[in-house]
Length: 104
Image: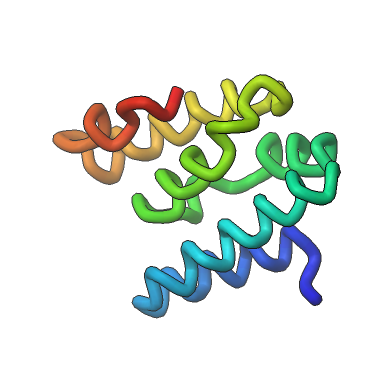
């Protein structure tokens, strides 16, 4: 079993190799595992430290999607949202607004 940060790194590697679905699945399992086990402070730390510059559009939107239901319990999510918005503006400036709709 990989640690959450290793799971995130693996998700990024999968995504870079073209395995989008597997990358997203790995990301979802890592974050959801922390939330479901009650490790909210660890999940929040992960959100604070995650390198959004290493992630592509799929993983960035996936990260905001999986954390949206627990946003109130994750204080670092609002700064994560801002960092993701900046990254998406760099990657897909014409689509960033649409991709972020409802994920605040």
